[in-house]
Figure: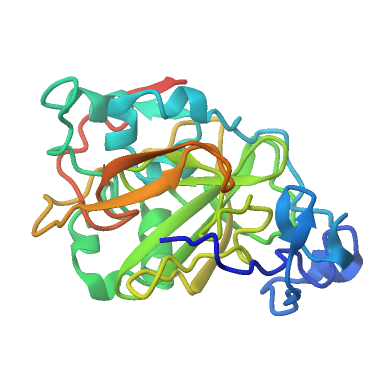
Length: 288
């Protein structure tokens, strides 16, 4: 779990997206490693990078609407990080309808990589929770035309916006999405939507933000940025039935930063654990 005692590092590359060098950078090896200081967005940048230019927007980025999404119990409990990132603000009505009651959605299984392309049980194998496998499965689900590799400083084509994939090898995968305004947000498993990292800081760059949630969960592997089609709802599918899932209670601030109000939620894992069943209703979507 994130800690307020951490000293956040600057999230900017050494050369930001306003520079030719920054736009040419594909791997982020030149990240700034200085400590972030209080300033723009909170403790996100060092003194040198307070005016850093971030990932360019295409104009198709979804709006960040935590007050709407987090008020919907069934949405929170049935949509995981992949659903949130790849669907944008489109809710899968088929998942909602699978809830046993208004306050019981524990039997509903998450959408998972491979769920639509014949590998619905893949993420039950912890050894397959790696960057190459997750990327390949998602490409098979939604198609390479609708899921294109990108970089932090590249601009997605018209009709697309940016997401990012990270992995804790052999444990879990996780997704982030870029929102209208340029910052990033995410949703871990059945926890609320949020726009802060493991240090409770806003997310300017998911490649450089704090993804270390403790000894049992650290998304060290950054898989890449991708442009996803926002003109059509992605054809995602649920994974295989959950097995041996241990729920954990995590405490998060709902609206970002250490000063936000907080609420305790019973949580399934962020991405992989708690995979799922039938995908009949994966195209039934409601924009919220």
